[in-house]
Image (cartoon, helix red, strand yellow):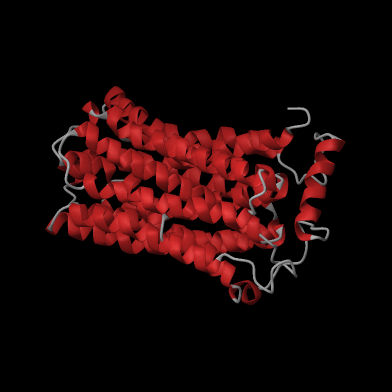
Length: 426
């Protein structure tokens, strides 16, 4: 990795996201079995999910400010230690209330991953590579979900019980923590990067803002950031799109069962939408970087792909009326690919728009908005699925990202404040 140590850092961020999603998807993949064992309705299962989302929402906003104050290395270390412990403790659950309690603890710990990874990218990667770096770590969500699809049912069948699945997936975070503590320091003080790589990172950072930027500079007051329209564009880009992804990750197994499929017999079909999301991450990051390298502004490249992704998610509409596995999974794959393109651009926006000392805060607020939207949508999904069907859920989920795209095009633009103070020109 000589001269490219930043990509080792990116690989660690990818690994933390894979483990993060393995831990949260264990419950979703086991949902059909748990619903049977504990006699849960869809509405009851939704409340278990909401316990996770409630903590995730509350702590996203707090974790962003905490990251900006205490630094990426220490904050992410505590986050992974926390959620890995909570994941393993879930094996002790005995019913609805204990599942809710352990899922709340898991959500509180996992809330720091995305703001932390976004902040690390802003510290380590130049503009021309930032899209790729965000795609790399964000792809861990789809990879983790894809791995969970065959791994968790295998563990369930092998042990004849669901509890070892939580123990084994939860233990992975402790291995990651060793590598992270050994590897991560800011590039200004890192003992193992070359002088050339350090100079490249710091010069690009300074050129981006026109002044020297120090990640450890004074914390930007929340009021200053919330008065900027770009902040609200970044918040909307995730607040209106992430609930669609969580609808798929939390409910896809239940949806397949509602269509008459057995989850153990459709592992490959379950896996395909998550593979498509992984490809969408890298397409979005790579294509936006390609456009920027050919003279497009950062803002124009990001907005273009967000709009294109918004139209692609419309593939969920025909999926709502299909009963054959292959075309149904294909429509979900188109939608998850398109969502991932949008997600990669949305995750890039805080690092594109703000100096490193404010990135964690804006990324945290964006994640909190995503969590708030998911809280509402998760409860409604449980109610509507029990009383009606999944059709109105999928139709609504396909349309909301277009609204997000419109808001981003309107709000995320250069203004008189761009290039002055904490706000960059895009």
